[in-house]
Length: 151
Image (tube, rainbow, N blue to C red; front, side, top):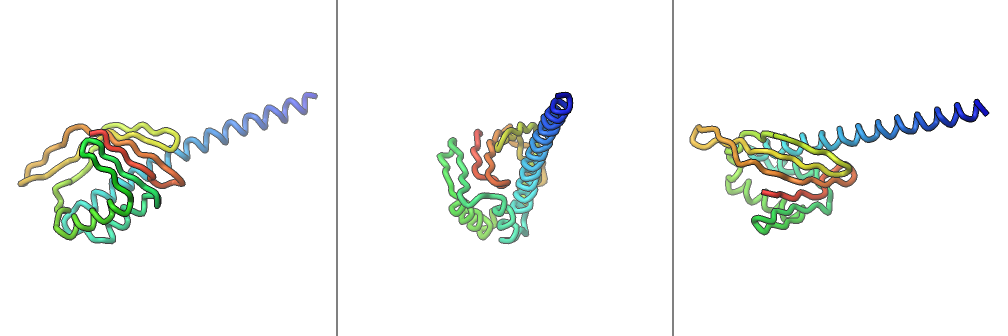
């Protein structure tokens, strides 16, 4: 009987530790994807960026990815957002005005995260920060499946 209790308790404890490790790995992977997202977007926004830079940024999205920005009545699929990024690149819209993203806060949950951030902007040599903004990210299979902007 004691052996059975020992084995049962050991099994439960090891299961609990494994579940905690999965949670930590999950949060770390979401954090990594978010870091890559902002790093790649920053690179894409610079003068001299390439279509390959845009492709790398979009590789973080699922095939059924959607982007929603209710304030501007924007709803985009991955394909429509990609075409828009290519048009913006072609007309010189990615000119280095955005110099960084200042992440103020992140809350990471199960297959989702909210990010509170500011754009760091450069205009005529003057650095400024945008208003505080909030974005919701949803994830599927280790990729971003949806972004909803709340600013």
